[in-house]
Amino acid sequence: MWSSSICPGADSALPAATLVAEIVGARDSAEQDTIASVISAIGDEDLLLVLDNLEQITDIAGFVDRLLASTERLNILATSRIPVGLPLESQIGIHPLALPTDDSVASVQKSPAGRLFLSRARAIGRLDNLTHEEARDVALLCTRLDGLPLALELAAARSRLMSPSAMLRRIEAHQPVLSGRAPGADDRHRSLEAVLDWSYSLLSEDQRSLLIAVAVCAGSFDLGMAEILCPNLDSLTTLDMLVSHGLVLVGTEVAGEPRFRLLETVREYALRHTSTALLSRNARVHAEHVRVVVLELSVAAQPIRRRGDRTLQERVREHSRSARLGGGQRAVRRARDCDRCVRVLG
Image (cartoon, rainbow, N blue to C red):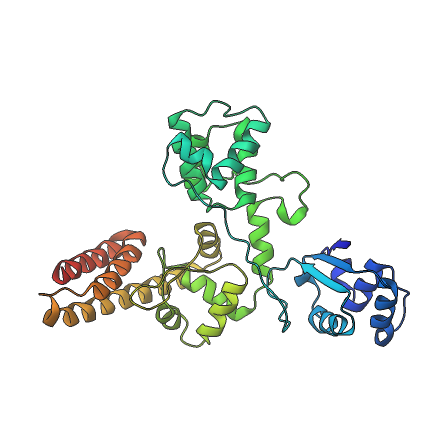
């Protein structure tokens, strides 16, 4: 097995052929001969090549495709922010850790997110005997940090200085908590902000524009909302790429329509990169769209309210959740409109 973590800078500036040849110890040669050199270095061995941060190399897909077609003795296991795009590529998504189902001590200690936080905190002598109050705060902290392993590790490292409840107060006040560096982490993982900076830097301008636009949706949103917020973009293709980057999550369908959402940490990051004028414009567009949809559903509900339409109820309730999370007087009015529509449908 050969492995390499591709670092930004010098490594990413190398052609894919040169980089892979160096990893397996192949003889340096012109690129047209590099595949043969790599295969010669492999010899009769079955080889697993492990590559970390594959998105760093812009020309990696074509080279890897030709290399794999030239030998059956090579398998490649790679990590990447985005799919490489090869025909035989098998993708395994890495998702956030499952959250506690409630705020009990047992639930926190059983959940993957709670276990990670507690294991890191206990490694520095904190939270050995978890109380119910501490369990409640840890459960809230896991939820607030979206179950992201790096965020949980960085927060747990602060247990030396402050309690989970103190961390929550600082996070809600947008005060720094998740700085520092996880053990063995590189510069990109010195803080959650640094990780998001890195992910954001990999996006195209269209992808950044859509991410910033949908950040106004505090709850989930559908494709129609994305298209209304960014009418000049190919929202379907752009949204698909944001899902591939792991910045937008696909939620459950409501009334046959897929819903999407941002992790709260990603949403807040996007909002910080939105100008006041653009944020105000997106909020107005979002509010007007919710109002129109609710009115349309209210009218559609009139002929069928006696028997009740659960599909319409689901759609309105989802808009109600999104509206209520938006905050401000406009959100309150939207939520009240949604609630009235739900009562009509009931």
